Structures are given as structure tokens and as C-alpha cells.
Figure 1: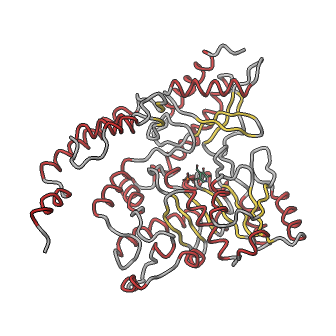
Figure 2 (figure 1 turned 60 degrees about the vertical axis):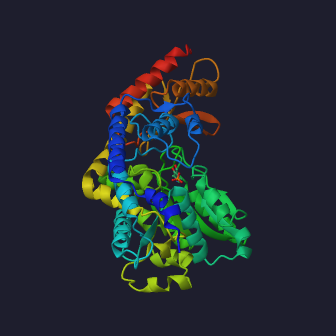
Figure 3 (figure 1 turned 90 degrees about the horizontal axis):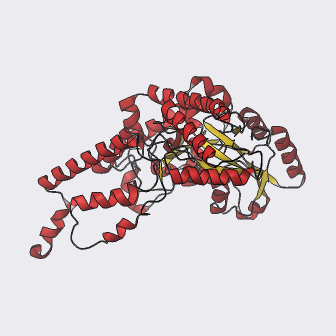
Length: 478
Ligand SMILES: Cc1ncc(COP(=O)(O)O)c(C=O)c1O
């Protein structure tokens, strides 16, 4: 018999009482408004904040802390710190912004805590996730029989693709040393990491030369594959990029698809950043051939503006993804009933999982698809605008932006350009009003401008150009 007196009062405290709930809702809503109200004027980067040290003032204890103190510490330690990815002036890495409707979708998903892994547990939640996946398959141009899995991000989705390819090709450990993967220097590094995680760290990686726009050269690919066959190696996996992280370059996907088909190589496309630009009709031509890929990675937490935690693998043939992920256990025997919908757990390494489809379904249902198309088209236009304006301000530009990522740098008449741009970047970060990142290509340091946050409009881009120009002028370079 449980001693009610000793535990029941305290264990019931996990349910909020009505007044506590009201107080929390009030506090959350006022924080929500204040956060959004401050976004346009606030900094995009705070490198000199307290680095999260405020958390040390509130170690976990048996008793609760006052709600005001909790919000103060959260604000000081987390929100007032580092990069602000929600800011329209965040142009670093691959930003998306995190739309509000997705936050509400997450809230509802977490509150109701529905399990979307197995059809039996919640057919509606599963149907919803499958609807989201089917919409993305359609966007890619996949036909019936395709499917996918909602995962946590692009790295994990690329890992899932590599494992699927490995299993489909029935490569055994003894084959790994002979298996060849074809990519370029501009392929995202999560692919190399994924190969290692998939046990294929000793496989052969061929870095295929690129053209001046950083796209793979298909002729060089063909020659390399031919040589590898002659050497007795196993051409296994071709990875094309549809929007590289450094420059947004898109590989010639149609040509790559032909080559892969000819040599029976698994063709994977990493469209983690670029994929949702397919929503813009005028850009679809650039992606031609993506529909022929065996697998594609596309990240809603990048160009669909979702908050972090959304990456998706799509496969042309559902059976391949199933083969790599399906498993069952005696304790799940009841869940085998009701197979009308494909269960996400059968297509993913995860069993118990975040109800990821909710944020996407909720956002698209509330907002419609149109604003996403328009926002992405706007980012392209802004990148073209930036291309012209930053040159007028005296900067050298990299290749014309294939999508919404640009490279630029200042080349002083005297002195080392790399040093000058490193110094300029440090000034931009110290200033913090905008945030941009940098990269090195063939020994040259470039500043990267990734225009993707849905809150970035002409005003923010103009502000960025002015800020960069003023800081460059403050360096007194010649
Ligand atoms: C092209 C590309 N692929 C993969 C990734 C990795 O995705 P994630 O950071 O979601 O793991 C990124 C991240 O920026 C990317 O740009």
C-alpha cells in the first residue's frame, strides 16, 4: 500500500494548479510579445554577453524558483547571447528564422504528447506526418511508391540516406574498402561524418573537380568512374548537391542522374539548404534531374523556415528505406494491427520520437503554401540586389549567386586580403548589429552572406550593406 501522506501532495505538483497555469501563460505571452517587438531593433549577434553564466545562479534544487527569476535567467543566459537566429539581420551559416506558427504547432504537439511513430498508437498523427512527407515527395517530383522520414536535421538525414544506399547495394564489411563515393570539395562535411558513422570510414572518396561556379564536372566524374571500374573497385554512391553551403551551387543533376543510372550507382542529392527553392516555379529548371535521385535530403529548418530540429530524407522507393530501418519486437505485437498507413518507426532509426510533422502541418495549414513561395522568391531577388550593391560599395564578389548565398571580400590595394577580411569579420562580429560568417575556398577567405531568414527584407539587406561598408571604411585600408 502506498503511503499517500508521504508522496501524493508533492507528486501532484507536476500538474499546474489553475492560478499557476494562468501566471505561466501570462508570463509566456508577455515574453513572446517582448521578444518579437525587440527583434527588428535588437542585435543579431551578442558575442560579449555573459556566455550563459547566469545559469550558475540557479542550480537545480528540491524546491521551485520564482517564475520571474526563471524568465530573467533564461533571457540573460540564452536569448541575450550569441547569434540570434530569429533576427532578420542574421545572414550567417544557413539561417531560416523559425516561424511563429511552428512554435505553436510544437506546443500543441508536446501538450497533447501524441505518439506519431506507429499507426496503431495514433493513426491521425501518422497520417499527418505521411501527408507532410507526401507533399515533399511531390515537390521533388517523385511518383507513387516514394516515401521518407522526418528526422532531426540534415546530418542525420544524410546518414540515413547513406545507410539506405549501403544496404540496398548489399555491401558487406569486406566490400567497404573497395566501395567508392563520388562527391566534390563543396559537399557538406556531414557526408564524410555520416560515412564514418555508417562504418564506411575506410571507403574510397573521390573528390570530383568542379567548374568555376563550384559545380561538379560530369565529364571528370565519368572518367573517374571508368578508371575505378578498371581498378576493380565498386562505384557505389554519387552525391550531388542542390545548393552547397559555401556558395549555393547546384550540381548538374540531370547529367549526374544519367551517369549514375548507367553505372548502377546510388544517386543521392543533398538539397538540405536548396530543396525548398523548388517551390519557386522559375527556379525548378535548375534542379532538373533531382526527381531521378534515389534519395534526397531536404531541411525544413533551413528553407522552410521551421525552427531547428527538422531534416527530412526522401526516397524514390519506400522499400529501400524500410529495408534499412524495419525491426520488430515481441512487446510491440499489438501495434502490428492497422497497417493502412506506413508507420514512421518502420522508416526511421527512432522508435519513440518527437511529433515532428505537427509544426510543418500546422504552419502550412494556417499560412498556406503561397507565402513560403513568395518569401523564397524574395530571398533570391535580395541576393541579386546584394550582388550589385556590395560591388558598388567596393567589394569583390564570388560567383553570381545560384540561390541566396553570396561570397564577397574586400581586396585592399596594399597588404594581405585574407588578413583584411578576417579583421573586417571580427569588426562585424564585435559590432553585432548584423551577423555574417566566413569561409575559405582555395586559400581565399570570403565573407558569406546567406539571405534566408524569412524576416530578412530589403531594409535588413540595405542595413547590412551600410554596416559592412562603414566598418570597412573604419579600417582605413587603401
Ligand atoms: C547542404 C547542407 N547539407 C547538410 C547540412 C547539415 O544539416 P544540419 O545542420 O541540419 O545537420 C547543411 C547544414 O548547413 C547543409 O547546408
